[in-house]
Length: 263
Image 1 (cartoon, rainbow, N blue to C red):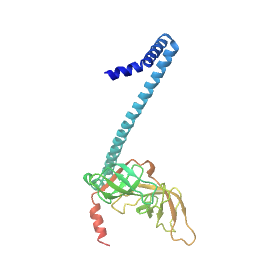
Image 2: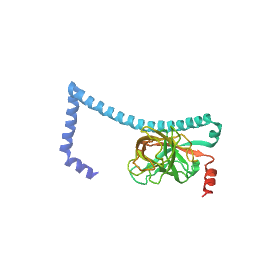
Image 3: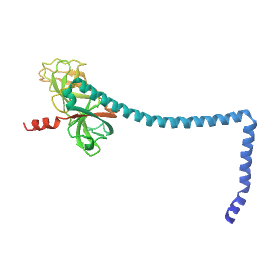
Image 4: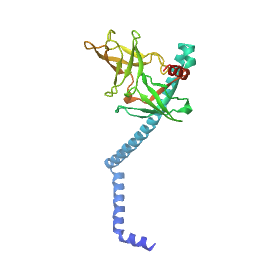
């Protein structure tokens, strides 16, 4: 107590000065219109800024919830479309919504991680797509998360076909640009034009036929070449990838076992 009194006595002049300054400020603001309005304006601006920040934070979380709901609705709609397409497809193909929680786009061996795992029925080798098109194939599965080998990985190979005439090719990535990939194994006698649509072939149990892959950007065929060099602009924008759909094929395991038995 004595120490507190000593401190107050030592700084008594400063404390009196501070109280007088506060009193003078209050008197001026209450008796002068301009300072009062200036103070109120500043206070209002602060409150408005605070409300804007709170609103942005709430909007962010609301938007995230809305995006998750929209992704779930897209999957439900796709499953319904699949069932309307044919009862056979409905019994075999099912889509499961997932969120991308990790991803790389600037490496030769890019990967992405989704928040679904074995407890959600995810299995190694299942296809991954989004509303734009093909994304990749599940590589590793844990209880709650799975690692996906995306199209933009130099180890990726996706069986494709031209939408215009069903001619087959294999989509590969050269590691240069995450917007483009190369379509290989297209013979020289095939007529290739910029703008040709490339879709999944349906020749493997990973993806059903007809999922968008990309659009032919350009094609070159040098004299004596047996195959075209085809650049495809990918349908999927990997820089903006947030939500995906896992393609669950009930017959995939059986089909793969039969195919492996032929090797």
